[in-house]
Length: 332
Image (tube, rainbow, N blue to C red; front, side, top):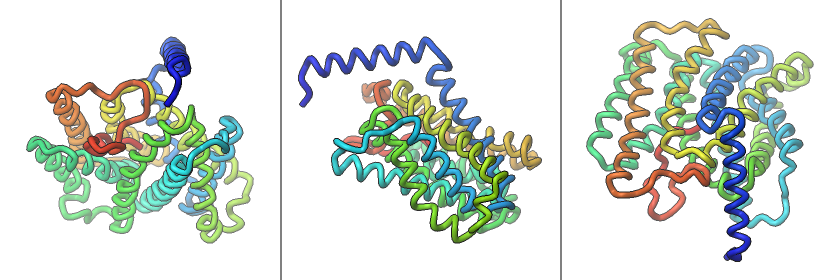
């Protein structure tokens, strides 16, 4: 247990950091929005690179560059951590590799906007299942209507089935990411845990990337663009989200993250010339509405019980204790 003087000093330092951060720059809401825009436009750039190095090759380069950048910038301390700390980092790194690999396999086969919309269903399903309120059946039904429309009204008849399966699997990995992102944020200062987890993810992805792309990974132009993708899709958004979660209620963060399918659709249109039909646009809107509704319903339930909203002192709370209701938000 920490001594009272040490605890008081830590609280004061945290308050000073929070006040300085609020007084300068974007603030927590701006951080999340900037992260959302960065990751989706970075994903669009990555899709344009896939003909050069393949989906797994781009994932490998992205994670490698991101790991190097974060390790150099953060210089995380590798000593003094418990076995549980390292277990969390290893699990977080494996989740990062799986989430990115599955998602890039999806966007190699289906448009970016629909892929992100399907991916959001994983965290949304957990949010709905975690609540026992009947109104969440409405949100689930709304999301299913969106999925039905997204598939052209005929069980994904207009989308590649393998791409759909990859997007749904990426959504499941995103749900696991919620848990370990929060735990990593609580166990490691600043972005140290993220840097270590990114290195783990890069090591895990490297054999797959080499097997798929080989010497294509060493082409200078591909390396340069992959470095840009790493900054836009990994370093910047993950760091911004990790920092924002220390000062922003998890429910607010979750609602904002629900906008990612719309941002992805805009990025796909502007960079990849992937237009949306009116029906597809309506489908994405329904899934976004369902995600926001499910999150706000769970927040309202907590307030009705007299529980405070997520404090601004740590990462998102996601099934980390015996009283937790499970992941309440589609965070990425």
